[in-house]
Length: 211
Image (cartoon, rainbow, N blue to C red; front, side, top):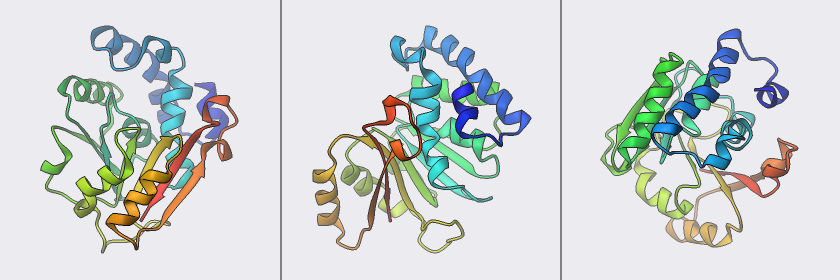
């Protein structure tokens, strides 16, 4: 928990309590349904929660923002972001039912009021969103193909233009090239997470913003 407060010093008492509860909740769920590797559960706050919160360093979602989290797994980045931005709504989607069960269970246990969940493929959704997030789920061009019609292009009220915020790693040049082949007008920004966090884990991690 200290690592979260190191980078986010203005948390409310409720947010601190919610973040604190995540460790025991994910440990309990992981014993039933293995959604986080045994090794990673020991560094949950750094490798999963703080990693998810890189998005909160990039943008502060305003009240009423609707965010879609694709391939959320056990709720990353959706659950940490929902704690951070209680006046925005987060829809978490995963094709694996047991993973959504974990995300939903954790969300209920910490009394999040701004989350909803869907099991299945993202193409089946019927709403639109201001932002779409994902963490190491699929190549960016595939995610764009699946979801481009879900981005609300009319209702702009955040500091950033509505679009995609992905957490990724590695060499992404081929993904960017494929994205440009689909839509030449796309703007792609890449931010190294070492700009936000000093821990070694973030040396090769990136935030990719596409609009």
